[in-house]
Length: 384
Ligand code: GAF
Image (cartoon, rainbow, N blue to C red; front, side, top):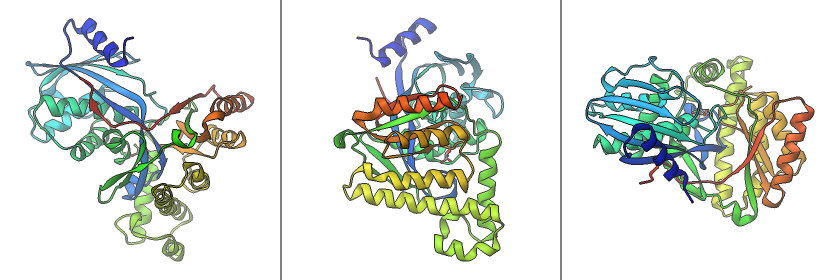
């Protein structure tokens, strides 16, 4: 049987007429908990998933970068020397942005023929763009001889996303895609950038993690995401803090009179979400069951819906319907404004719960969601 990696390599050979010199892959992610905390220098707990971006690569000696995808989107071409922010749209800016970011660090970046073959759905809140960036980063890191450690690649890929692609995101997605390990979630302190792997043996306890892709497409290079980030920065500045990481919930409650109502609600989400991440990590590291995470997932969703206002009717229904059908916990995952929810369910009930969520969407006259199981997987790697 042909593996996905072999299929990508074969597609590259057909397209470019020569074999690739390497194939690199990186996963999309779900975020178990810790939403909109990364750019506030707080805590996150994502996991790489078994949906990956695969990049087949052949370096070129002439400095030309040719990019093609097996998915939707046009091919693109440039020289590495010419690359600059704003010059590309769509998927190829995540490839080219990484080449550009290596160049900014003084690395002599070779030209390349590249084929992207990804099964991370775009616009679903599962970090399809970070998966592309991280797979490309491994390729450029190797073929340029730069040899940067994974922690540096996180920041390099974030810079590609922020400054080349124009989305003002934090380090959650790129960290998950580069640093995850199978069977675990990744606990990351976004202030110190220290991380550790937290056991998440769902199969071992008869549980499964469902993604409910609402099909409401989101993007973080416009509108709401940047507004939320600005709200948080304003709240921190009013409180005289460098970031919202620096205040506890009791102290925030005491400081409430100095904030306007909106800034207070934004800050309350961030500060309470950080506390929830720490509680979830403590629970899992004590060897307790993931099935017990429900109350924290519910509180996270409510806080994102009511205080941070980044949910939408489809995400709320996904969570409500999954819980009504017997999920142990559910919440929106990722930046919001569309995208996906996750639901922690007994494995034996996964298919039924998925069907019930789809029926609820049909009754509400929403788009047909896509429901699928994911498992925590390894981060970016060279496939051959
Ligand atoms: C998006 C961003 F890319 C992340 O950096 C993070 O802020 C997330 O939204 C919200 O937690 O995925």
